[in-house]
Image 1 (cartoon, rainbow, N blue to C red):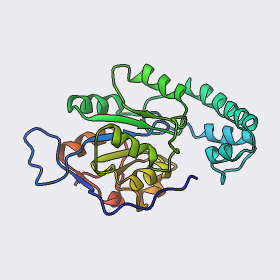
Image 2: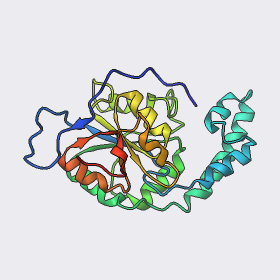
Image 3: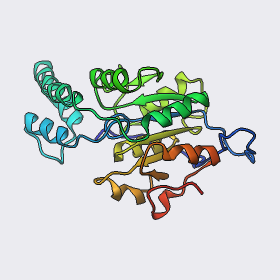
Image 4: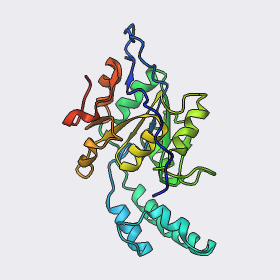
Length: 243
């Protein structure tokens, strides 16, 4: 995995309610939400990563992108990228949206909430998902592993870049990062964002991780949480929390 910056100072884990006429009580106003793609906007395709590693001849202990960057020649890196992209292109044809995806995005659009993507994918699977399942929704910016001069997650560079693009001057402290992996939680935490884990049958161990602020079992669980005020409590031992 890529190295990450030192943890930022304590950051807000509470945001004012989004519902109309709610009293914020001096809490931070949420400025935007960053989403992962694989396993977050679409259902997990865990087999894809096994296929990638098999194609590259590496085991589960080796980060795929770190392995590619460490290859000794441009030719070797290009060949490895082509193998990974071939797996991704095939898998994207089987993409299925997460339950509650459209409902959550419609809600956020009505609230004029900024949305961005930060993914370790390359561009094609991201475009495929948006065109087929969220054709009317805008995500800006979209950060992929090929975005120039930005290290991929778990490095916080992509999320910090999004904050700058949005004109924020407090790192990512008024943002939320939503994802399904330790890379998502770590990058969000290191950037100063609150983090939300979308729980599945393989990542439940991350519910108690100190980089995880809140857990949900469906994307549209976030609607009530945001309406009534986000409170991060390290998941509180449950899969969805909105205290």
